Length: 71
Image 1: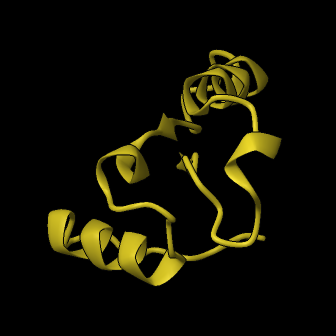
Image 2: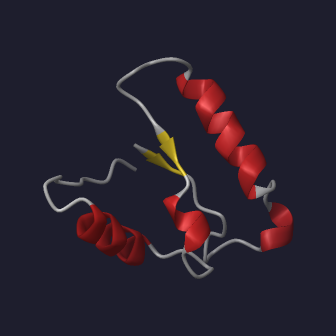
Image 3: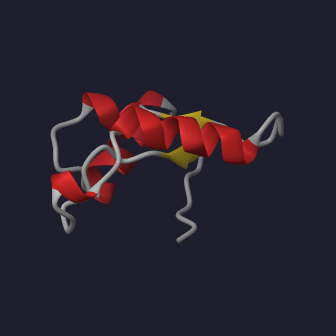
């Protein structure tokens, strides 16, 4: 899963492309590869987005999954 962040806490929002444009770019980059998925879970979380909050929500929502970060 590729998590697109609407607002990085270390970047000014006016320096970023709109969140939906970035989501579309990720979807275009992964194409129709069935093993990849772009998700917008952080769009519903408070901004700015912090990784620990996202991981907490994902773990609560998908308790049978094990999440890892690839940076």
